[in-house]
Image 1 (cartoon, rainbow over the protein chains, first blue to last red):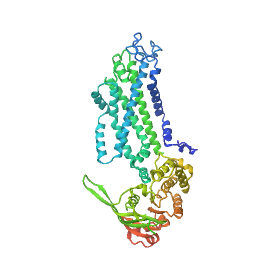
Image 2 (image 1 turned 30 degrees about the vertical axis):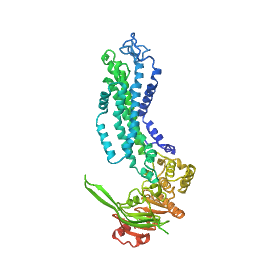
Image 3 (image 1 turned 60 degrees about the vertical axis):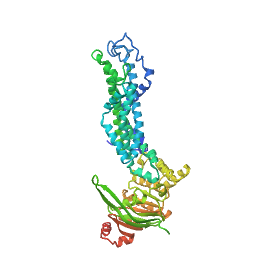
Image 4 (image 1 turned 180 degrees about the vertical axis):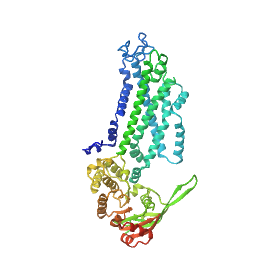
Length: 297
Length: 255
């Protein structure tokens, strides 16, 4: 049933407030956003709030079950791993590796992609066509494969993984930004601004860039979910984070030998990866729907 | 008294690629000449694809002509220098909603126009904006609205405000009144005629609506496939059309 609108007020909103309004009507997306905020807080503050030292090995509590099972201890809510390290503290610290570093890598890619994308979008003719075709070539390679190739060149390690993921997600940003700018430049209102006397730089700065936030946030969520998966996958393969680092992917790989003895050591980091990627995708989907709804109104 | 705009033998050809190396030439406009005086209205009528919009784009400088010349008040200006020409000639888009940036307030759009093309200070700009809004029957509060908050008629007024804020001598209305419903159209037309009496602005009206032309225009030009069929005072064109095509066009509007 269509809602009866008694007040004109709802329309007196800024475009971004309207977007937010449409976003919060989607409960799954909102739920995803809450989970992401919690993860972000964890990623920043985990060293201060984790109950135990994530690297401390306690030989008295090897492979302790989670506390909801009969032989678990409340002091170790998620149990311990094969070296007696508290799993909860490790998972909390892992959020800053698996999630926090993914955000940093994608943000870096977005910034560089924005600059190069502007160059690609504002140029025309042979220049931009060469640029675009080179990027198309880079886009045909799956990002994980590209990251593996880059890691193979740089050598394994967490920091190298971040560089690899930054470089691997760069082409889609450049392409996305370039296309969005080209699309904006075709609009009537850009011609109107030209007639108002704006030069290229002013059009870019005051018209195109403010309108770029929407496609950019969509690109960001898409790149973020692949980046999280790629970091975990590289960690699992032993190419990313190395042994004591509590990165979720490498934790799964380390605990794989004990999957029958202590299934929680594999299941919990895996579950966290799943939840993180799911909520990123939910938020991205919610954003896309909200934009569509706003455009229809 | 010199002519405000004098157009001599204007022509424009578009190239359309039909294959990898082949292309077809489309003559959009050919040998168009006319003059426009201050306080006058020239209507350009014709079917779709007759070159009406091309003429408007050439005049305002969105496209460059292949041949012929356009003189503004007796001297030739390079049309692509918008900062100079937009003090003189302004263009209204067919769809007002699409010519306004959805993410900017009206005040920001109008401020930008003045910032790009004039040397007014911030206070003077503020004053000019409220003056222009009131001239078009809008309120000062409307400056803080976003384009999506206006109705169609109001949007067209905003678009007019944007054009008129630079005090142009000529205003080009490219089908700008077509999308409005009749009562709104009458409102805007009366507003425009009022303005013309007050300021002596000249209009170039590009439209399909012959009733409006009869009411509004001093001169009428009929375009057909890029060529001028009729050009003269409106009453003369309507009473004694010379060509078969324009006779049909005008006959169709009698009902």
